[in-house]
Amino acid sequence: MAESLEIEFIDVYSPSGSGPINHWISAVMNDEEPENDDAIYHWVHIRDAKVARRILEKNEVRGTFQLCGRRAWTQQMVVDEIKGLWSRFQNAVEHSHTIESLSEVPSPAAVRYSGERRRPNLGPLHDALVSCGTDGWRPMIAMRVGLMECIAHSTEQI
Image (cartoon, rainbow, N blue to C red; front, side, top):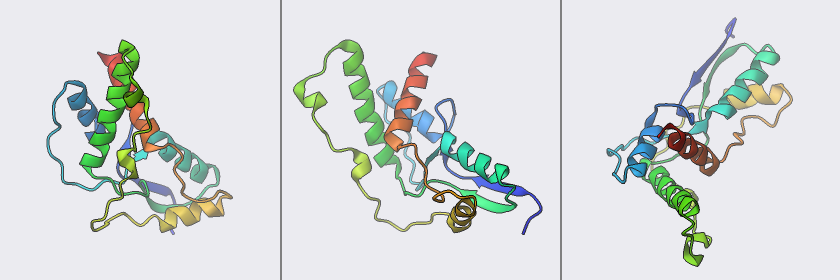
C-alpha cells in the first residue's frame, strides 16, 4: 500500500469551475447548442469529492484511489437537464410559469445510459470509506441540484 493518500479526481464538476458542464451551461444560457461531445462521463460534485477526501485523511487512509460518480452520463443527457432547469429558472425570474411549465416533467436524468460503461474502478475507494465507518462511496449531491448551483453561479457572473 502507498505511504500517502493519492486520489485521482475524475469528472468532478464545480459551480465555479471551467469544465465541460460549465461550458454547456454557458451555451444553453446564450441560446446556443454546445459543441458536440461524445465522451461518457461519471460526474460527481466537488463537495462530494471533498467530503470523501476529508474522511480518508481524517482516518489516515493510505493508498491510491480513483474517484468519480457512479452513473454514466452522456452530454445530451446533461444538456437536456440544463435546458429544462434553465427554462424553469427563466420562468421564475420572469413570473411566466404555466401549469405545463410547473408540471412534473420527467427529468432527462431518468434516462439510463445503455452503452458500454468504462467507469473507473470505485471498489477500492468504496471499501476504504467503509473501513472508515461510512456507507462507502455514495455521492449525495443529486445531478439536478449540482446543475442548478452551476446555473445560479453562472447567472451571478453575468
